Length: 131
Image (tube, rainbow, N blue to C red; front, side, top):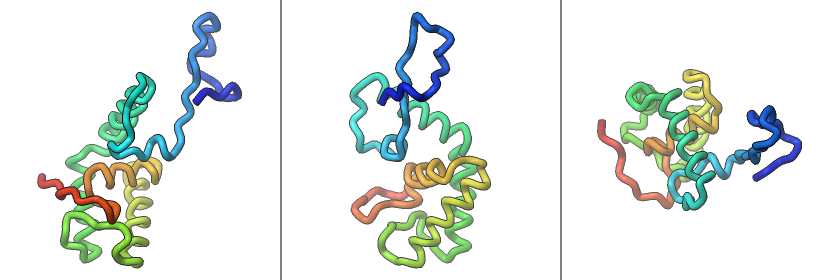
């Protein structure tokens, strides 16, 4: 979405003024259900995925997440949100802990937990990852 009040990296190129893209939570929390139709959709998805993989490498992230789950007494390799109120709160706190460890936003940590199937919505029936 274009926002005329937001600065752009391309402001110095007045003759080639590029539209500014504004990311919203609903855009970045996409876990593959949103259709990537336009070039901008693909660019945003690739940037988000690359950033999460770069800042939170899968092997390290997985080891830390599994250790946290085991220390909380959750032996499965995932937790389904909505099954237990106290564990739902724990998962929310986990997002904050992981965000602090990797120096990323809480939203980015939560997305990575979802993308690697550590946390799932109650309607999802995905298999857990095996590494």
